[in-house]
Length: 363
Image (tube, rainbow, N blue to C red; front, side):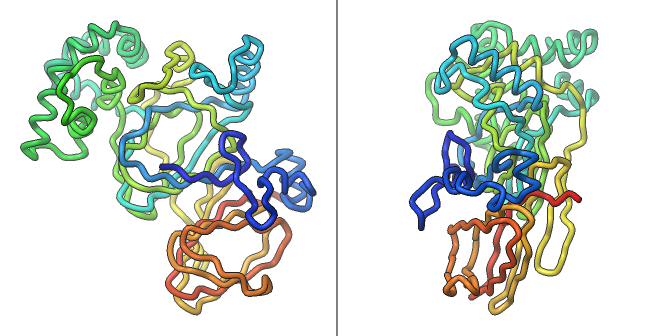
């Protein structure tokens, strides 16, 4: 399940009191609502705010750079690919860097493991050991390309025995969630007829499997392959829905386009560590489009702020009263927007947590 807060045409938010879309409301006075600097830099709301509840693992994804998004969008549009066509990769001309903060224990795939770890994995599994010479001689990119291009018959021949072993191990509690086999078993347990195995399974053996605890955050830039496996999070990204898929999905996978954009780098995961200012923790991200913070208040505690951009706040626990707005009450699950260059303050009526999306101020 996903909950979107923003202006993207795929799922635009609505201003409840005015019964118009957030985009229409902004267009009434964009410089005032967004802030002059934000409007002149981005010509619109530059971020998209989401809440995700991941029960079934989501697809492996890669997002393009802004330059490549513009090229891809214009190319698909010129070719007459409809915006809602299943083979449409580029829904807009924007990049899609993103940060996620775990709301619970959260599991994800993020980037490629080290070459040493990949080599060890290929040696460990007899079904995959056939690929070891290719990896040693031709490297990660060519190994991944082969995984994505071999026939479905070859995929099934290699992976069906591995899926069966994985299911057996999970049933015996012989593996943990840090083991790729645990996720493979989750994907296929209970299915009687094993065929057309998803080739994205190969990638689970190549990528880092990460566990985040509540409050921990990670940043995912253009080209970094990733997939959300299990848990709840809040996610903030540039205002885009451009996705190049790499498996773990029945949806369209454009292998040539994926190969153009995926980063074949053994990177350490880009964890974001917040700075604390009183009741607020700010997660600064290496992009101009967005920043995010958490606000944690006890009953009766006040929060005061001065906006420099349009802010969207989401309450995940508790409730608040906004003073000066006819003492408007917002509770768990509610979201509200506050325009740029506005002083505001609210008081918590119980133990309360909010997440705030905004554009970082640049002098």
